[in-house]
Length: 57
Image (cartoon, rainbow, N blue to C red; front, side, top):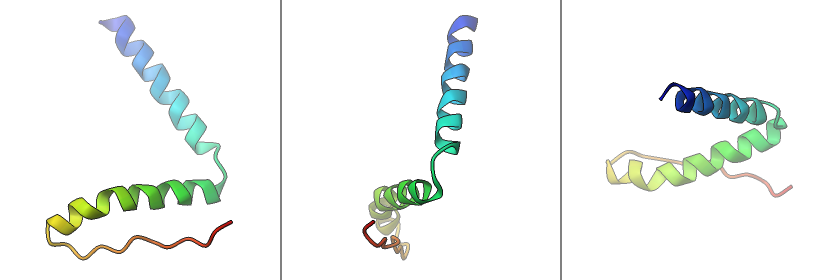
């Protein structure tokens, strides 16, 4: 189990570093994708949700 946890933590660290290295514009694009994915769920809960609109690059 210890080897599995070590491998998982290494993969998590690599992913964090890869995401941190992305340009700011790409990070915002990913954020908007997450907003769009979460919006239907939040609306079902009765919350007023607005997904940001991005200009095409």
